[in-house]
Image 1 (cartoon, protein in one colour):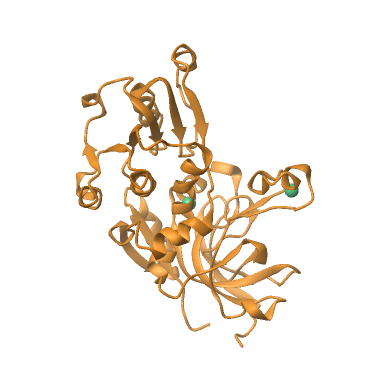
Image 2 (cartoon, protein in one colour; image 1 turned 180 degrees about the vertical axis):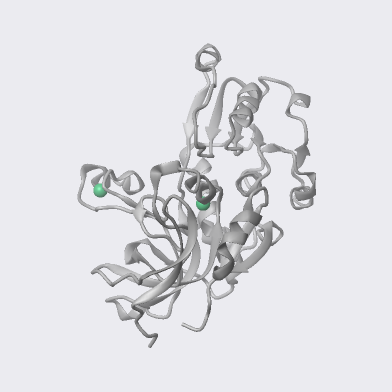
Length: 325
Ligand SMILES: [Zn+2]
Ligand SMILES: [Zn+2]
């Protein structure tokens, strides 16, 4: 039985980022206390430290961890990943099955719920998924961004006969491309990081360093994974009339995108955020998506500040929590 804690180390943002000793979370009915094993640093976390969502608290929403406390004994000691939106289960939005959009929700490390970059955090049992034994922690920690990549095909039917361009070769772009490759569609990734393309090229995915080199208004589906206004504009240029433009990245700020161009070309704009965990776990378990080349470095929690510094511009930096819990 792992011992209860009164205080714990956590990496927080309260106007500045810092390591702090804060009260450990206390168990509430229906939730679990989780000891994270690995936490991922995501672009969203970096945006939060620049003011996105006006969030103050423990950072982090990507994790693989171990359940250390909850009311259901079957979960204790289980290695888990977890969906990040904690919904209320009794509003009309939840009743119609749109729990991730519950207006009363809290979101792990993003909105009124302390995140994963700590020795302990709390999440509803309903959000948890057991990690298959075959998956290492270093693979399982990619579940949340991979689920977000899968959300594209969950929301919009991508036909195998369509032509798809993914703009952006960051972590999300590399995961989105691998998911869309499974449709059999013709696929190109546009980005500025040729050193990351080996992973794509090994899977037969075309790559291009210059969006201007691709024919404009020529692609059925274009996915923006850049999180930048310039990337979004590059993506918009590639969509054919009556094609679909999928926005996969949140960015802090506003976009100067010319909406009348979307009207004239009758382009469908699809916003896409969190996705389904169960199929993402299946893709990882079957080895259909590769994540290992995406890991740039792993830091201990005590070096979270340096890890955040290293995460800017890198594909994926992870934090490893102290294991002596
Ligand atoms: Zn994320
Ligand atoms: Zn609700």
